[in-house]
Length: 556
Image (cartoon, rainbow, N blue to C red; front, top):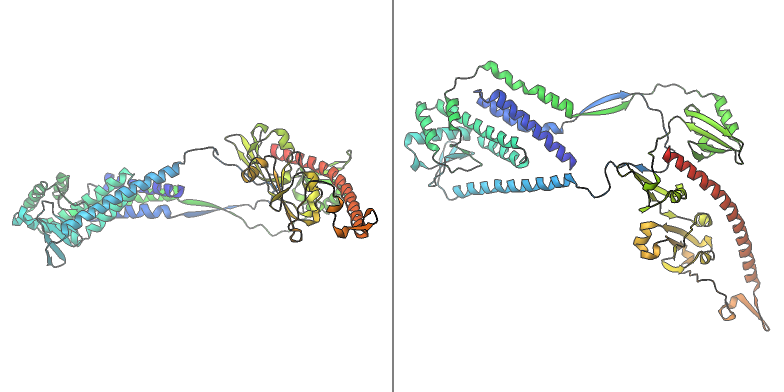
């Protein structure tokens, strides 16, 4: 819609430019035929030139390769996200209504013309069709049809009228009238286009008067005919009608001396204006990088060797982000800005800053929203950076809106990823069979296909109030379909599977296979617990580093 708006503005400006050039330079000249083509060229140019785009290539030096070390997509909307008036939509509605109204008027004019011509007798003469009507209307021509009421005029007057209308018909002036009327429909909001239409119609009358007077011996009688026709006020809008307002101007132009041919230079006066329009409004600048010179980038081997040596046994941090050895190896040493080695802490680190670090927008904790809910600085600090899907910074509201990911968790990282202070709603295979994390511990992670975590508005929209603390949707593998786990309770003998027990007198004893299975489960649980404790300690350290890294990026 913005493109259409800009196009209409440019076209309207060109129409206004041609109209002013005609009024200031050409209106008083007797170059009527040339003026006709000038005015038509103005309409065509106003439609075509806004579509012409000239490309200007600007050669720039190759920019150094930069890497976006942050995986968080960030968008900065230019306007307020709150309710606001869409002016382009309002423009589209008003513009469409205007076009509809003027199209209806255009259609009504054709209907009026058809009504006049319907059932009338047509007399063919050469290339013209003469139609004598009884209505009290001004004579007019429509393509090769000439309509008049012979009972209103004398023989001489009728002859003058027909000579005038023959010029309109022979030179296809109806085409000019229809084109200008269509422009009035499309650019109905532009006052210049209505004045332009009037200038076209008036110039066509000048042409017809000039040509008709060449075939009429008594010019005075022709001028008297012009005056007499002014008494017929009814005319058809989409035709070339003999009566026009401003009869005085037509009579003045009939008696005016021919303009000097040297004044044809005035037509060229519009060319610099067209050039300026193209230069200022239709040039698209395209930046293109120069071909980089083929040369070998020599890196001091000492730097690479020193980096490898320095990084051994240390945590690698590049631009504030914990990185791997592979990322360090792929880093161009020439892009390194500074290196800091810290061996005085429990975990020695090597911190590397590169030359091209993206600058992020500063935010304030009072403007932080996480998944649509306003959050405190403490909540922001506890947010896992890996869980962030998108960050929107609104400079108008001075706010930051953070959208977290919908996380799918596999069985391999099941125990390591589910950390929650509240008690979320737990859904197993679409059923609310799990109620607590204690029940969740009874589920074998190897049977889990995926876990989908919903938080905030997404959880509430799907599960209502029950989803206020978040929702965990757990889907098990195909061989575990139908699995249900109930809250913890002891089995009595009647609940034990017959395959699990052996009767030995008055005792109930588990079978050997069941004992073996239980032993494996206990050993596995113990191993998992030890692993979880280790991972928990590591996770705390990693989480703290991630927080500091994210803060340094967002507030730097």
